[in-house]
Length: 191
Image (cartoon, rainbow, N blue to C red):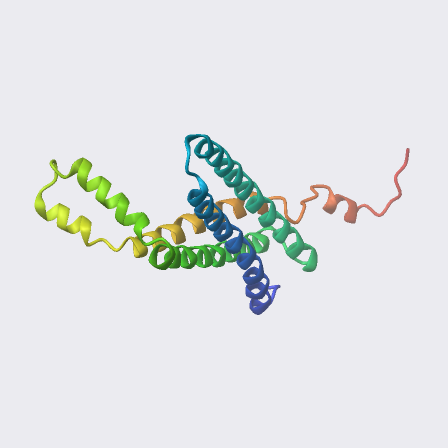
């Protein structure tokens, strides 16, 4: 297999794209955290829920759009690329983006909002405490949710980005099924 694109260029370009995608997802978390602090009454809670959904949809669509944009720009900057090279770029971008977002989320649940998971574990303990043995309750209390969250986000975001890259790379760069016929046909078109 011939490596047409230097590895350093691949990682440099994917690093910049991954940084942007990771920051978009991280900004979404910060904005929803701030909106949760604002919601107080029932009327604002409904508005904040609607706004959170709209922000999630914008983040989801925006990340897909940005991934396609970065893959298209990368393919345009490297004319010898084929679809597998573009997929490789998207996969590296997905990994780096997932790493940035997972690290941000780890910092978020560790320092910014450490009570997020402890409240969830307390609620689960209250709801299911009578059905679980004492050993299970102790084990549940000892779970480091920051680490669980880090690896869960890393794997989920990487898989999502890899699947998205596989879908988008099928047409980046654009495949022309008639390109070979055009190159082999040196006669002018007769009409």
